[in-house]
Every structure is written in C-alpha cells, then in structure tokens.
Image: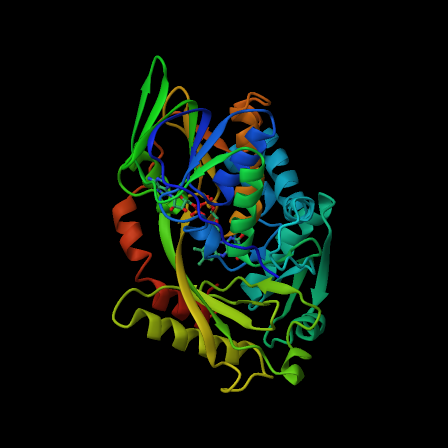
Length: 421
Ligand SMILES: Cc1cc2nc3c(=O)[nH]c(=O)nc-3n(C[C@H](O)[C@H](O)[C@H](O)COP(=O)(O)OP(=O)(O)OC[C@H]3O[C@@H](n4cnc5c(N)ncnc54)[C@H](O)[C@@H]3O)c2cc1C
C-alpha cells in the first residue's frame, strides 16, 4: 500500500508565519514538521507538486554512509573534529532514524530495512571499502565485512572481491515517502502551498517577505530547501552545488526463479563504480538500475541501453527477457565540491540547506529536522554538524561543471572498464 496523493492550494494573497520554508522535498518537510512540533506557525511553499524534486525521483536506497567511500576521518578534515564526530553519529544512526520516523508517522512507502552493502569491484575499490569499513567499525557502527563468496551469495552478483554492509540501511518508495511527509506536516498544522514558485525574497525590519506568482508570505525566518532545483533567482544557493542529472530504470517484476537468486534477502547495494553499479528490488520484485544521464542525442535510449547492459553484467541469473523495462525517470541531485551538505546564511534570518549528493534520504531528513529545530529556537546553528557559510560558497567553475556533468558519463564508464575506480 502506498500513500494517497493529496492536492494542496496555491499561495494566494498575504500570509504570515513564524517560519516559511521553500521546497517540498525531504529537507523542507522535515524542517517544517519538526519546527511545527515546537509550536511554531509554519508555511511550506512548493513550486510544483510535493516530491517534485529529487525526493520524489530518487533511487529509494537509504544509506548510513557518506557518498562513495568517503571515510569519517576525511569528513573531519572538512568540517572540523567536533562537527565531524557529530555528523558521523548522524550518518551512522541516520538510516535507522528515518525508518523509526516512517514507523512513528505510519507512512505507507514500502519501507524495508534489510541492510545496505558497498561491494568492491576492483583492487583500488577494495582498499577504499576496507578503509571506510575499518573506520565505521572503530566508531561502533553496525557494520560487517564480507568475503567475495559471501557478497556473491547475498547479492547474486558477480565480479566483486569483497565488501562491507551496514544492517541499518534499506529501501523504500521515495515518492510515497514525500507524499506521506506532507500528510504528516499538514496534520501538524503546517500550511502547504503547491504550484507556487517563490520568485523573490526581501528581508526588512518587519521580517522576511517571500513573493510567488500568486501571493506573499511574511515570516520571521526563512529556509530555502530547494537544493538542485533552486534555479537562477538565488544564484548563491544555485551555484553552491552542481546539479548532476541522474536516471533510473526498473524492470518488470522478476520471475520467481530469478528472485530467489538476486538480492534474495532484500538487501540493496551501491558499489564504487563511477558508472552506476547498484541495485535494489521494489515491493513488486522489480529490479532497479541507472546512472548519470548522457544528455546528448537520444539520452533516454542511451540510459536504457546502459542499464540493460549493466544488469546483465552484474547478475548472471538475468536474461534479456528479464531486463524488459517497466519505467524510466530522471532527476537532479545536488553535489558540492566536498560531496557534503552545507548551510548558507543568505541574510540575518534567511538560510539554505542542501548538497546532500546521493545520500539525501538519510541526510536531508536528519539535517532538515535539526534545521527545523534551530529555526524554532530549540537549538543553536552551531549544533548543525555541517559547514555554515556566511557568504557565497560557489563551486569553482560551476557553469562548466554543470554542463560537463551532463556529458561525462561515457568517460566514467571508460574509467571503470580500465579498472581505475
Ligand atoms: C535520480 C536520483 C537518484 C537518487 N538516489 C538516491 C538514493 O537512492 N538514496 C539517497 O539517499 N539519495 C538519493 N538521491 C538524492 C536525494 O534524492 C536528494 O538528496 C534529496 O531528495 C534532496 O531533498 P531536498 O528536499 O533537499 O530537495 P528536493 O527533493 O529536490 O526538493 C527541492 C524542492 O524545491 C522546490 N523548489 C525549487 N525552487 C523553488 C522555488 N523557487 N519556489 C518553491 N519551490 C521551489 C522544487 O520544486 C523541489 O520540489 C537521488 C537523487 C536523484 C536525482
């Protein structure tokens, strides 16, 4: 069973709120829910429908690890020791926190917590995976090391030399989760507006005024949770992360005999290839795959062909018939130069939070919650364990990187083939 999609009104006329949140994804909705829980009057404004951005379009893999094989020690180098320790605790416990919240809110989103694995496809990947495993183990995370044979058995996938897993990871239906969060926010008194793109922000003595095409909201403080979908009306937020265009496909439900061989325990995985080595089954037994969009020529055809080949390469039990596709979708993911999220302080009482890379189910939920509590006055800004920048923090050469991100996929595939990843 999935959440029932609800319609929310457009912002029309003049509204007031203690806190206004722009963006109806996991970050904005968690901030809204947890600020409202502290008794604040909250308005949430979304340009399209709830879940319109990455939150309704992601792969549904909930991961208790930083992007790729970034170990906690490297993160400490970026955010400092105190925040690094706090962020490691948030990341390692964050997947579990997402599942506990889904349970508490009774969100119908096929949430399954059967673990997540990071298998290694090359000698270089083995070294990186081992390092990240050792660091999490030393920090007391629920991690296990697996031999090559064990990885093969658990994933039903070939070619892996070993890997590690965390039992708290899992899978879910991303769009239903977004829809469910909106239902909970509404029940807690958050006023939700859809089809209301915010086009200007102005901070005055009386508060922060947001304008959309239909109305205004005057609030004491504002959070932009617009992430990779920010657009150019807020260039400081837009250029603080590169919007990387990703796609996913699912097969039709797999045959029972194949399901007994692939991801049979319901575990999901993400390897260290640059060209999309991951997999999960959905509640109907469809296998998901994907990669970065190659936005040149027939981009959908290119993606489908790649996904088909990738599934056949990884899973020996799969035939051409099994890789007949059921669906294809795309979305923008915000990637910062450090692959870590950050807060931008745009004005005295105007903030943005984003840059969750491919770990937004965990990070956008848990950091969104902390941000909501900060906006409600229940914690200090310094307690949010990411870098807080008081002035612009653009990704160097942003325009070039944003363009290259849409063309670089064949290069990533080549690097993987040559064993360089
Ligand atoms: C294809 C894909 C696969 C991914 N896979 C995974 C995965 O498996 N696991 C994982 O953990 N993460 C994954 N991610 C990343 C994850 O989805 C994101 O990090 C997360 O959803 C970000 O949430 P958010 O709330 O910050 O932003 P979003 O969900 O993108 O929400 C931003 C919202 O802001 C709205 N908006 C923008 N501008 C305005 C405006 N001016 N006025 C009003 N509203 C505005 C947009 O319409 C949008 O709805 C994936 C991302 C993509 C694209």
